[in-house]
Amino acid sequence: MGISDQVVGFVVAGLPLRKVALSRCAGNVRPMRFTQEDDVFRAEVRDWLEANLTGPFADARGIGGSGREHEDHEVRLAWERRLGEAGWIGLAWPKEVGGRGASLVRQVIFAEEYARADAPARVNHMGEHLLGPTLIAFGTDAQKERFLPPILRGEELWCQGYSEPDAGSDLANVQTTAVRDGDTWIINGQKVWTSLAQWADWCFVVARTDREAPRHRGLSYLLCPMRQEGVEIRPIVQITGTSEFNEVFFDGARTAAANIVGELNGGWRVALATLAFERGVSTLAQQIGFERELDSVLTVARERGLTDDPIVRARLADAWIGLRLLRYNALRTMSDEGEPGPEASISKLAWATWHRALGRLAADVLGPSIELSEHESLRSLFLFTTADTIYGGSNQIQRNLLGERVLGLPKEPV
Image 1 (cartoon, one colour):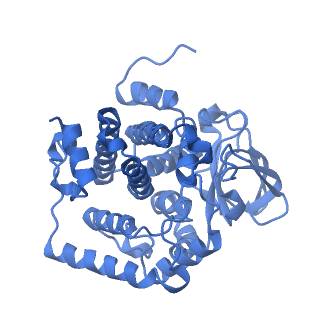
Image 2: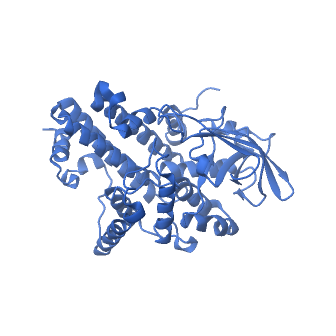
Image 3: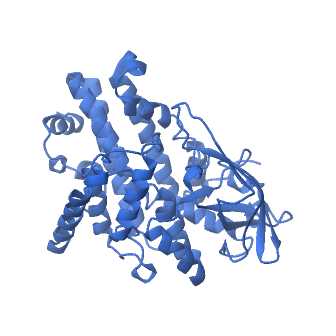
């Protein structure tokens, strides 16, 4: 019996997955050790979730996530504020900026218990996991005082203004401009594939502030309010029939001159750091949804008797092992010290490829009746994940980054 059969045997039997020999797929990552204090913390998280996923949130378990961000947004926003009131937002942020300064172990514990409780998908991933760490690393004291507390309270939502029609994976080709006008910046241009812009209060925008400078050196990182004249949001209807993504048009939109993060024309470094946070630290939280999806695929496979099929069993095992490898890589990334580097592309390449494969597995488990199936979430999973290896930097771009900037291979000829 190989590792795949062993894993699926445990999964099908419903036995604790921790009993499987994780060392076979963990490489050199050391196993986490939980102290008695950590166990007390785990009980605190578990008890709080059980006590609060009641009343107005009794039916909120399992809602939201990729391809399903339209589900009960107002309920999930209220849940975000409930998390903020209890101090569960910004768990990893330093205490001096309002976070808990939680250890890596306790961040993992919270993610695990959140997944087990099937709590709602979060609505401010962009704020907590992308902008927050970026401001902590590069922001001024005034910026931290203004923008971090509303994120911690679950009161202000954020979106990311990176991609453009001619600047997707090639972010340095950004054409959106920002021109200084006294105490404000005036922003003009178009962003596309802007996730959750229709609900966002603010956007962190990469804009060109020096047209004469080389591509990477003329960009700045600006924080722009979304609810103003000069900002138009057009939802993009996806193949799923929903609209997580949007086009955003800036036509004379304004933001305060003080809302520039990092140095003028130094936005490239800040933007890459944000991407590294997205592809490293926040991957651990992202896996909460992935685990739910894998559990759903497994449940349907059991219901249809497909777990006796050796090919399906092997694919289920590969999915389970792959998800654990994503977790170990996220833990390794989180434990690294210093500013995130190009190695963070490993996370994007790994999770996008894994998630797309899970979508295809879901489609094969549902079979030819997928369009008529009552399992709408799995149908949506298949449709949505076809884009995973494209958005946020395509697999080809990630491999180029790793080859050139990590392995030191020759650059592609211009």
